[in-house]
Length: 247
Image (cartoon, rainbow, N blue to C red; front, side, top):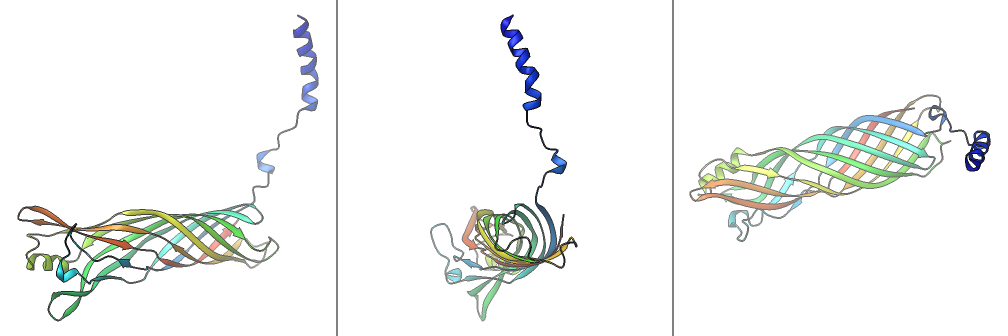
């Protein structure tokens, strides 16, 4: 009974001493920015030559991949909880690519053959450091993070498929396959606001990230199936221009 009276007396004094919890609607969460824009993507396109698991095919021995640059859309969301730091999530939509093989010797008088086409979509996460403080209308930043790149809508060209059949390697149409990758990413950019009372801003950034994957060409043979392999290094430089809204 004495303990009960003691706890009751202590409880009467606790409410005045307890700290009031702030209303979440009145807390300073920092800046939120949503951006939408376009990307110019220039792949590195290094790769090993197409080959069998053990042996190298003579007509493909010295071939190198040629993948042209592409454009796509992108959007990003940024949270700046502190004046000089921010967290950014970005997605770059499926960019279309055509892959050619240079130094090809399988057809006399022809040094290039179309290998196939594919799309590449990338999702990236960055931690950004803002060099200037919030009083500046132009705020440059650098960031490091990770990327996930998915290669999809992959198809083998008719020209390369016909080469496989004419050379006696295949008895029918083959398939071209690319996988996906996880790796590092880095960027540098700038957010430019026309006026602090105006929520719209313009962003320009350049990114580089590491992305490689295994490429396989699978085709039917008289004994079943066979495959050609290559290591494709995507490793693109990405130039972004977008319009953002800050709140």
